[in-house]
Amino acid sequence: MSLYFRTMKKLAALPVKQPGLRSVASSISRRLAGEERGGLVVADEDEIYRAILQERGLRPSRPLKDYFAEVRADAELRATFEETIRVHHLTKYKNYDERVDKLRAAITIYYALVREIQPQCLVETGTAQGSLTGFLLAALARNGKGTLYSIDIPPNAGKLTMDITVAASEVGYFIPVAYRSRWNYIEGDAKIHLPRLMSEVEVDWFIHDSLHTRTHMLFEYEVARALMPEKAVIVSDDILWNNSFCDFLRAHQLRGYCGFSNPNVGIALNTFDAFEREIGLGIIRPSKSQPARGA
Image (cartoon, rainbow, N blue to C red; front, side, top):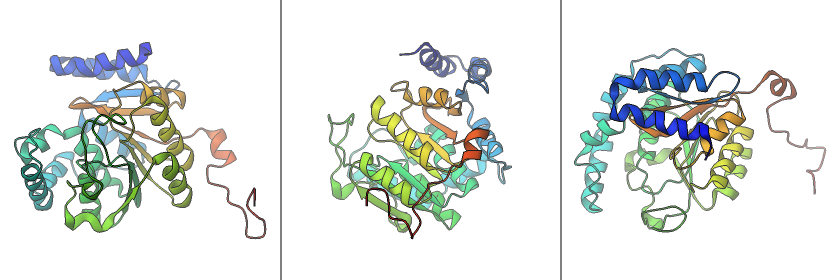
């Protein structure tokens, strides 16, 4: 485990114990993630919201608090959550309002920024219960556009870093029925389906939440970086499991963000240097007059 990653974990945990140190922790993380190095910045949700939009060349059309209110007032999300915790006997949150209060960082990234940026095509790996997927699809429904592709192997507790079991027929049970028209579920291994899908469809928003091993996480990040356009969004859950996300950011001199309320979720924009832009970032496909390589 690198010194940088150990430092970031300590900075992320420090304000939880001593809230007065948030600005200090954020400032240190920002200096460590300087322009020439890249890395992870720990920040309040409002700062993440503004920073990502600014890096996309956008100004917020609404304050972040409006989107928290929108999620809290979403009758479909509320009803589905309450029915799901009753049927599946889940006890992590007492009620829907407590869940919204404790998922501020996730709602900022999975809902508010989706509402503002309005992506056309999103891909996530690892759906399982669909706890966060529901926020993505609710945002797309409000936007009135966009499609989400989810790649997943139904989880079994104790296998592939999973601690829950979800039957294949129940994957995504937190997703309201009313929002499923924009959802395409692909059952299978992301090592096969992710590069195939991203080479066939232009994806502007990627979320990793599948197998949390260093090899697999880096594979998914690198595929997303190589096959997505500039300023596309790369999101990852469970970034504090290991140093994969931090190492990915540093290797490509990218600045990412995570929130104090849940530093385990990270977000970054896919940016490239002048040399890469000059060479070209798109996927080179054979012309109709020339056979594909290996044909």
